[in-house]
Length: 565
Image 1 (cartoon, helix red, strand yellow):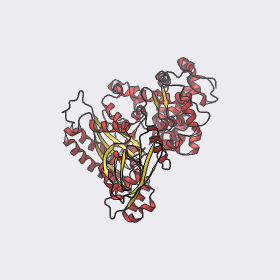
Image 2 (cartoon, helix red, strand yellow):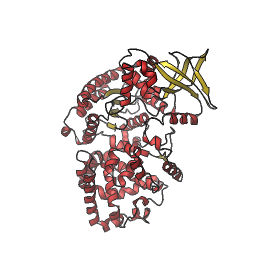
Image 3 (cartoon, helix red, strand yellow):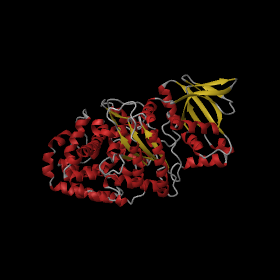
Image 4 (tube, helix red, strand yellow):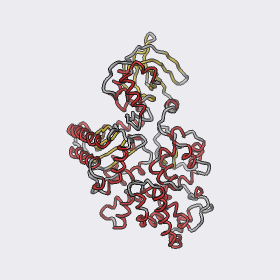
């Protein structure tokens, strides 16, 4: 990764660890903003579906020593970033970050963002320089005021975090370890307990005080959810209204909390029962009820205590643990892909991918296994690239969650006609676009005027999905043959994924110089299907006029794909 991203490689690694990102190359292509006019923003990552954003500044020292101090000025740079993002007129914002800033501002105003994380990422010991944290506290206070003025009635929390070696190590351990909190914790509650056991697990059901849950959350924060598919998502007027409701109950009707709430489920390493009373638990992760836990912790104070139903489960079998987690979360909206993972189409596609041992497609199933030495196909990005290739780049870019969530959108893509080979074909196109953008970025001052225009185009939000759509529109003109069924387009030999990515470079090099025809579709963001279609059709007209020339240039590409459609 260092070869591709240089000083930003650690930043991307931290992002990947923290949010369990499968295809970091695709994310990097869209989120990295680092350059000569980035206004102190090395990265702006936006996840509307989960309700958060990350604005980051990175510093990676060559051959750091144990006693080295992280630079304080890099932390203070985040104040500059916040000012440009939240206070400047969008037309004054440099092109390099304009698309990301516009999208983040819109997401905040529309109530889709609950938390904005300002990260200072470096490769030194966080404890060496306390001035960094002091500066980040200043950044957090200043940025919160700026965000409040932009958010209006929407509630958005700002968090400024130092992400050095200590935090990165903790996130790494969390990604490989289900229970991060290993302390022995005394139970505060009535203590009455009902115990039950299975062949590979045992559990007890009881009640604890709300104040006990609150203390746990305030002490351990997100470490408390190390075994949960998601952390506390905050509360907002449009998103996570349930969390607002929980907080309202805690503040106004604590005596009814037991009756209103389903309670929590926690994995523990062990628990202690004496005289039929639960005394303590050793190790804990809340695997169901993260939102209830976070909401209890998020209220300013408890006016009265209350009881929370909870069960503690002890299990040492990794497979059973995963099933416990999965089944405990099926009733909640976590990720739509989680609930589609056992769909017959996803099972079929996972089986088809077994023909290609160097590739990995989870089909939405999260098994928390680190896949090594394989090309991982992110299921959301698979769906997005397929939707864009088959005619709807606007939905592909703006509504990745909807593709999995809504039955109509889902069945239009994940149907019997979709094959693993076609997924590889389209996904490799998306990767080729990402890698070409990285290639242009790394050329820096050596970019020609034409390449500068191409790089500026690819740096705009939505450009990748628009280009995938435009290439699909131009495919007949490029290969010189009628395509009766575009779902049957695939490479004849899928053994070498990197080679397949390289084959798309021929196509990209032909079409990208005509990016000017696509530019109108990106004005104000990729939002109009009709404008996108008009732009793609104009590009096709240009390509068609030179069809025979391009077909000869693409002789090797055409030979490598299935044209028997």
